[in-house]
Length: 431
Image (cartoon, rainbow, N blue to C red; front, side, top):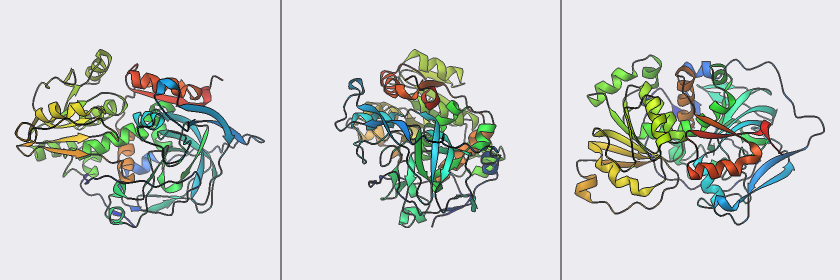
């Protein structure tokens, strides 16, 4: 069982290999966590109403990946009607109210990340409401067992299951568990009207939604936000900074004290995750330089308060203490390394990336420059970030699509047709 305390906001990383599962995979892993009081505010005040499935309704609409996926332009997803799943022990049935569209969904749909579950339903940025609970339900929040309630609004993210027993799990690095499972890859996700998720991997969201976020602006926080926060931690700029420092408003001073100056952070690519991460970094007192294609994305970056916005292959306006690559383009790695100061860290936030060109040791890596990958996130990352978001308003550039237009949203994502994040809204289905 993982023992987590209010420790420095850091973590090592590697790659894990998920196994296969289905919608009724039972999760028995329970991690005890001690986290700051802001989480209480972000997970309280559930509505009194208890929505139920309409009597007599036993089926739902959902998207699933075809047997032979391919380019999104060829429509690799199919729109189906199927039985509403039932929650097993330790699980909840969730009515999907909004589901963010992530680039990982595009990789799964096109087969770049072969689905671990045949005909899987993509989607892992889910905001919904609980409509039914299996036996033995509840979730650990700051070391206490919190009972979930029918009618409660909750979030579901990428990570679905870890074993709770391996060296990684018991040392607070559950994102590296070799038995990890993921929503929308190993089990059916949120491109549907309903989904099942394990209680221990559900985030209560009533407090967050009561703090000013709408359904469509909260959904991208569940992956784009959490993974971006994890990628920021991987840069090392938050080493030595505790969540208590952030909660007490001491983070800016602590970061400047540890780094020795106000740090400069570079963000390569400026889509759903990057535009959220930029706002977190700005709130923590960093100077943010955005390097991305597209004038609209550059304008958005400047409007959010970033110090500069240039093309992805340009050099930033000043040497960078750290950088994060969000774009799945390996060719960006060499210029990003060249942009770093001595001792700088490059964090790679994507689950999939094209090949990285050969690097020159003296030009790209000497002077103790580092490259760090990002593998998923821990639940602690999720709780910390969502608590931060509840007390530090983040502007989400959200673009809603009806659920039955998911393939159109993915096509637009691939084409770079919008800035920010696309969000599927099941209640707005056109068919």
